[in-house]
Image (cartoon, rainbow, N blue to C red; front, side, top):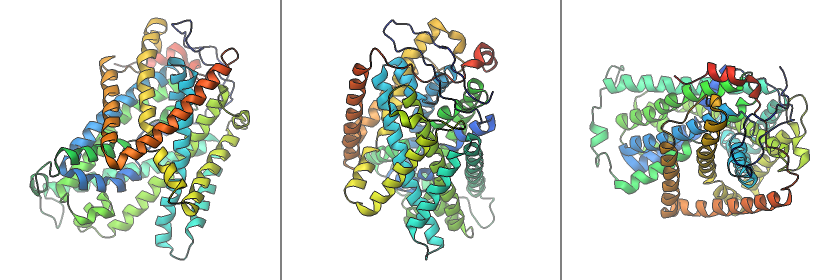
Length: 495
């Protein structure tokens, strides 16, 4: 089957006033394969934040950055498991926005969806700027704006074509990022054991010396924790992409299960290697933690090699964010929560949504040149905590939808949240704790205020829209993998 149909509801609702079960008449294609989904799940959270941003987190937390990444990694794995449960039960191109609408109401789907779209569009602009700076460093005579324009054009065109093109780009981008981290971990482990030529084992010197494991105390750990939480953003793309895969139910179930432990190894393992080999207060961390570690080991051309990896990470994120933004916009329009023109689909691709998302991202780039100190900074502050808002909606939605599924369609629980509902409540408590920590930290408090303002505006618009369309609201986005049915659910069932 090359296009989606409009299946009947796959999820009966438990309450009379619950949002109607989704249906979808948007003919998105099914061009993604299982290998695409698996790599999107792994590569989606491996971005420049890990390769570059982790240096500042290490400088703040010291060796305790391992604990910070472990704590935030645990929270992210819980969120991913919850999202995987809902998306395997009802794959939809709107992902958590659809789940929030089902569970809480149309205003929640509206708020989560448009907030996420805004986040992705701004992120596209930021990633284009970062990628252009790297290339200009290699080609000093080339204007930075021209490289930004080139990258925006390439990935806009890529996403205008068949979805399989997006899948292939992400597959190879993610494969390169994963190979780079795997090689880094192998080299680091050899150096720690003292068997890498030209190096001696550092033992526990860097972990317990120079101020100890917590050199800056709990405050430093908190700064590292906040940085690590946002470094994990990007896991949501795989559940958005699942709706366009050949076997959505089985695909998202497998992708979620295999990705979680690998993400933990990549992130926590990388931090452990870095702070074991390199003093946490090394000035070279400003270059990026991976570059600093490789240079410390005396490996030739480490800086340029890692610049290539970071460039790949940025381009991968651009590609994924244009894709995610366009599908989220298309889903919102299909549910009557956006301008109808954005929902136009041709050739299985929401091309108007792709163009709009790309243009918005390019506008953010222009603001970085024209108004860097006011409008652009407002944009950056507004997206500062959106991912936490999205995670909150995911947890609350799972808490509600799980009980409905257990009652009405237990066979669709292909992926099950562990220790439900206790770990769901624990995840909500963790999200609340991060909000509190952001409010206490002067460096993140402003971001929290701006994000809160954006979310309140969207929620207000969502409530107004819900009231205005209460009697004529279209059904929510379709569970595009519903045709897989009980057979696929049973085949992918947890052990």
